[in-house]
Length: 223
Ligand code: GRF
Image 1 (cartoon, helix red, strand yellow):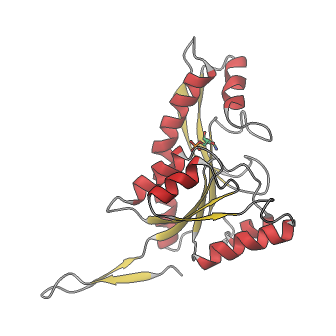
Image 2 (image 1 turned 90 degrees about the vertical axis):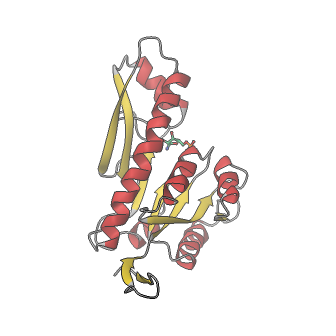
Image 3 (image 1 turned 30 degrees about the horizontal axis):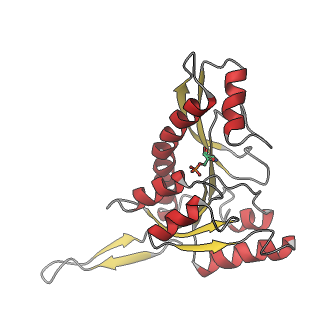
C-alpha cells in the first residue's frame, strides 16, 4: 500500500490528502547525464517521484558528482567494497530498505542486478526496476552492448533508424519487458559519437517521463 500525506492548505481551507512521492533510487556507473535529467524532472511540481539515493559501483563517477551537487545521498557498493557476492546483494538490499526505496532506475549501471534485489522490487509480479538502453531492443542489446559499441554496431549494420528503450529489469542484460521506445533517424554520414549524442538527448526526455508514469502506477496501487 502506498503512503499518503496530508497537506494543509491554510487556515480557512480543508487539508487535502495526496499520495506521497514515490522514493526513487538511481543506479549509475558513468557520466550521469540521465541521472541528472531524472533529478531535474523530480523537481517539477507534479513529479510523482523523488530521487532519494544514487547508488554507484564507482565512487568517482560523474553520476555521484551530480548527485552531490543536488545534495542527494549516495552509496558506493561494488565488488571492491563487497567482494563476497552475498554481502554485495545484502548491502544493496540494506541501503534500499534504509532509504525506503519504492522504485529503482538504472542509468548507465554496469553491473547485473542480483535476483534477490529484483524479487524484492517485484511485489506484484512486475519489476519496479527499470533501465534505459540506447537502441531499439531487442536489436543491439546484450552483454558487451553498451556505450559506443551499440552505436558502432548500428552504423555497421547500415540501420536507417535507431532509438532508445526503457524496459523492466530482469536478471539478464537488456531482456526485460519493453515499456517504451523512441525511434530516432540515422543520418547517412553519422559518426558513432554523433549518433550517441542524438540518442542520449532523447533518453533525457523519455526516461523521466516513463518513470513518472510508473511512479503514478505505484501510487495508485497498479504496480
Ligand atoms: C546511456 O546511453 C544509457 O542508454 C545507457 O548508458 C548510458 C548512460 O549515460 N544505459 P549517462 O551516464 O546517463 O550519461
